[in-house]
Amino acid sequence: MHHNIKQTDIAKLQPTLLWQWFDRICAIPHPSYYEEQLACFIVDWAKSRSLFVERDEVGNVLIRKPATQGMENRQTVIIQAHIDMVHQSNDGTNHDFHKDPIQPYLDGDWVTAQNTTLGADNGIGMASCLALLESTDIAHPNLEILLTVEEETSMRGAMLLRKDWLQGDILINTDTEDIGEIYIGCAAGTNVSFNIPLQYETNRFDDGIQLSLKGLSGGHSGFDIHTTKASAIKLMARFLMALKQHFDFQLIDIQGGNAHNAIPREAVIFLAFFAKDRKKMTAYIKNFEAMLQKELAIAEPKLHFLIEEISSKTQSKQIFTSNSTHNVIHALTLLPNGLIRKSDHFDGVTESSLSTGVLKTENNQVCAIILIRTLFDSGRLEIQDKLQSLAELVGAELDYFGHYAGWTPDLNSNITKITKHVYDKLLGDETKIKVVHAGFECGFLKQNYPHIDMVSIGPTIRYPHSPDEKVHIPSVKIYWELLVKLLENIPLKSN
View 1 (cartoon, helix red, strand yellow):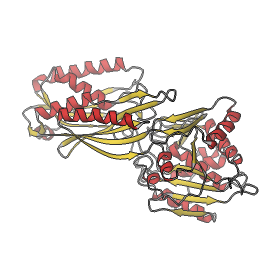
View 2 (view 1 turned 90 degrees about the vertical axis):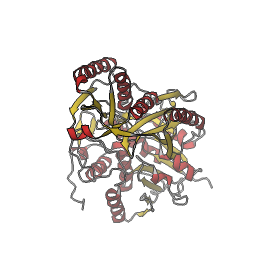
View 3 (view 1 turned 135 degrees about the vertical axis):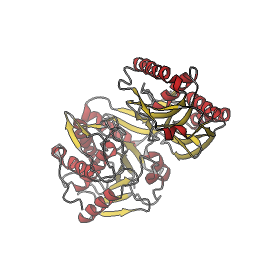
View 4 (view 1 turned 90 degrees about the horizontal axis):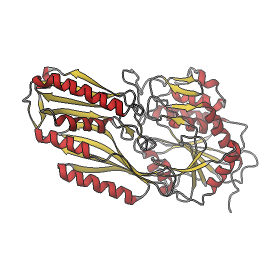
C-alpha cells in the first residue's frame, strides 16, 4: 500500500540510498507500539529481494544478507536499530501519529520535521541498515540486520529477544546521537510509580482556576539531565509551596509531563480558592512568573504561566482535602530530581540521576512516574532509599516496574579498537569513547548474548524526543562512510 510513497526533498541528499530509505520511513507511521505497518513494509521489501527474513513473537525483524565475494571468512556482523519513534508534537498541532506521515524538511545543514518529532532517532540508523541490504557495491561480511520494537517505551523488543536467533560475532548499534563518539556502555534504568493516596471532600470554596506552566524546552531525561533544563513538574511544586504560604486553597487536580523518559515541558493544576483572593492571587502568579523568567532566562526563555477559567461544574465538584493537598505539595517539593552524582570513571558522564516524567491524578491518588538511571547498582539503591524515606513521611506507596539492564563497558573490546582506528582516520582527530547515561538496547542484547562484541555509533541528532529534533546532514555522510569502512575492516573468523 506504500509503494506510491511520494518522495520529499530529503530523498535527493547524499548518501542517496540511506536518505531514500529515511524518506520512506518518515512516510509510514511508526510510533512505539504501532510498528506493525513499517515492519510489514520492510519484511515485504526483503522478501522481494529474496533475502532471508524472519519476525519473532515480539515483532522484531531479522534480515540476513550473505557476504560479498572474498569476505565470506570474516566474522558475521549484526547491525541493529529500533523501528519505533517517540511521538511528540507542538501544542495545537493536529498530527495523528498513527495515520499521518512525518513531514521532514531541509533547514540549512539539518533535516527537521514540521511541528513533530522527526524520528531520526533511530530512523537514520534503520535507513542505514536497509541501505546496506539494498547496496550492490559495498564489501561486507555476512550481515544480520536486527530491527527491534518498543525501544522508546519498554525495550521489550531487545529484552525478549530469543537467545538462539542471532548468529553474529560483532554487533554495531546505530542509536548513538553524536558523530565522533563511540559508546561502549550505558546506565541501567528503573521506573518507579510514587503514589500519594488522596481523600476528597465537598468544595467549600467559591472560585477556581486552571493554571498551566508552559513553554519549557524539555529534553531527554538521560542525555540532558545534567543540564540546566527545568522540570515543569518541579517548578509547579515550587510554585504551590510558595502559594501555600500566602493563600488558602486546595487542589482539584494536578497533571504534568507526558513521557516517562522526557524532562516534562508542561504541568497544569486546578485550584479551588475564595473569590475575595482572586485579584491578589492573580498578581502573585504574575510576580512568580516574572521571578522564574528572570532566574531561568537562559535555560528556559519561553517559560510562561497560562491562567484559564474553569466551569462552575468543575468548581463545584469534589476537591482534595486540606491534608491531601498538603501531602501532595510537600511530596512533590521534596521529591529528588535531576543529577545525583557524576562518574569518577568516565569524564563528563552522569553516574546517577532521576526524573519525574509524568504526573497524573487518577484512581484516588496522585501518581508520579519516576525514572532512575544509574551506572552502578549501589547508586540505584541509594535513590530508592531516598524515595522510600519520603514515601513514609507523606503516606505514599512505591511501585517498581520496567527495570532495564545496564551495559557494562568492556575496555578490551576488539570492535571498539577497530571502530576507533577507522574513525580517527576518517575524522583526523581523537574520537571519544563514552558511556551513556541513558538506556541502550545493548544492555539487554548483552544479557542475552554475552559473547557478542558490541559498540554503538551514529550521526549527530539534536533535541531527540522533542518536536525540535533534527539531524545534521554532513554527519550522516560521515556516519555512513564509517559504517562502510568498518565492514571492510572486520577481522577473520577465529576458528
